Length: 117
Image (cartoon, rainbow, N blue to C red; front, top):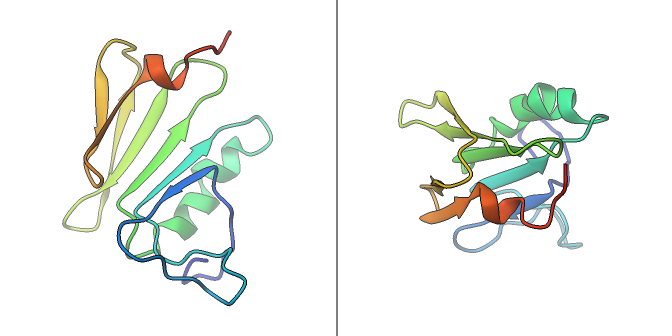
């Protein structure tokens, strides 16, 4: 749940430290470090705009990753120390990219293994 009131269930979330939950049900996380969304035709515009605007209000969020499903492409938004978001587009299947907030390297070849276009 974002401070702006959006309750969303991303495709993948990473939390550093203890999870902070909204209520006793335990299914609404308040402190993600990384959020990953796999883009689909029906949600792509929303994931890129309004949903990202809401996610940006989460003070713990450091990286927002968008994964294309129709090509090998990843967009990595990283929050800078000044609070602004920087976009890096990843398309080289040979070179890994790093999620710096969690010190994790991923290669597009691994993300898209067994995916046929």
